[in-house]
Every structure is written in C-alpha cells, then in structure tokens.
Length: 312
Image (tube, rainbow, N blue to C red):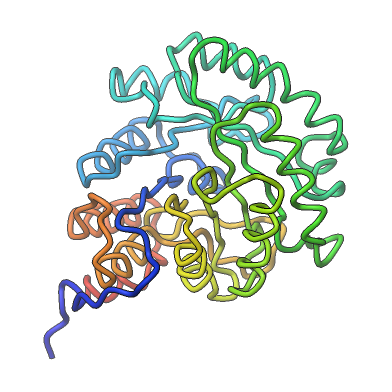
C-alpha cells in the first residue's frame, strides 16, 4: 500500500487564502517536559523549524528559573541563535516587567503576555487576581509598545476551566477586552484543557466581534485533549481567523487536564491546509523530519498523526 505524501486539493468556500502558523513548540511545547532539554538541542530545533518555512516561531519565556526550569536558559538560547532570534516573528513570553527587561536586553522586539479568563487559574498561574494581572501587564505592554515592539496577549481557559468548569462567554470577552485595551496587537484565545467544540468557538468569535475585537486581530490556540483541535481550527478559519497556534509534533499539553495530548500538531494543520489549497509557506516533509528528530531527542514517538502516517 502506498501512503500519499500530499492530500488531494479540494478548496472550501469561505476559507482564507493564506494562514499564518504561529509555532509554539520551542516554548509551549517544551515547557512541561520533565527532563531538561539541552539548550543546543533547543537551538537546533528552532533552526530546523525556520528552515522548514515556519516564519513565526515563539522561542522561549523569560520567566524565573524556579517557575519553569525548562526555560531557564532563555538568554543562552537567544545567544546561540544570534540574528535569527530577533525580529517581529520571534516572540518570547514575558510575565512581568522584570521579564521584559531581560528580553529587551537581548534585543527582543516581539513579546507575549499570558492572562487568564478565570480567577482560579489566574491565582494558580500568576498568583494574583485577573484584575491584578491586567494591572501587572499594563506597564509591560506600554513599555514594549513605546519601544516599538509587537505585543500579543494570550488568554487561557477560554472554553473551560478544570476548577471552575464551563466559562461564560461574556466572562471571556471581558478579560480579552481588558487586555486588548492595553494596546496589544494580537489576541490568542486558548482552549487550555481542550474541551471546546466548533459551535462554542463560533459563538465566542461572534461575541468578540460584537465587542470590537475582530478576526483580523485574533489567533486561535487549541489543545487536542478530546480530539477537537483541528475541527475547532477549521471552524475558526471559516469565520475569518487566519492565525493559528500549533506545535510541531503536538508537543506540549496542560498539566491541569488529565490525558491532555498537547497542542494542535503543526503537521496535522499543514496537511489540512494543503488539502484546502490554503497557502502557509511550510515544507511538510521538512517539518515531519524535524518532528521525527525532536521525538528522538525526547525519547518518545511524535503525537502527530501525520508524522506517524508519513513515517510508517
């Protein structure tokens, strides 16, 4: 039996002509790995992703080492990457002004902040309320924008929270609006525990649009805990979203969700986009090779179905 290397192209009406893939593997994908990945491996991972055609790659996070030991080598990683580590398409996550200072010292010109739609997760992740976290982010965003940097706002727990259960759409919109009112360039809405479904996605996007946050400002970030990540992504694309967060090999996951299988796999997304005739700029074969290589570094198979199929 011959395994096809590319899908047959059959466009669907209402889809964007081009999608920007926002690769989160080096940061969100690796941050929960129990064993520390050597910094030279991380640097090689980023180089391979760039060579495969991924233009936007989130590199690391400038959080205290005690919070996320896996990413305690942020400065060293950027030093190893050299010029490839700077620019609008090489964002890093910063939790506060101290993290921003560290990032700016390394010449970073694109940052991301990470908020929560729920009070419980805000306390567990940031050790403060939603309101206090917005207040903490305010000077971070202002200073970054004043310095000419590009700023993204992540909002987690947009579709459900493991402690609070279902999250009201109005509550999500309120938090998103507060962060975007700070002046952020882009909003990434996250299904942190992977419980969202397409109808829920469309209702949230419509509610955000009613609040003045339109799809040209929005990215979607889905986890595949219940196998819904790709379906939810297709629903969002049909509504006008054209930026999708994904992680090569499906790396990542949520420590607060049992059986979480990680982020939407970049390879699975690319296969679907190829089948729809949507431009994205990524070489699927090179990406599969990168995913296979990274899986070898981590000592386990890739979670991507496309990687498994093309490697069979």
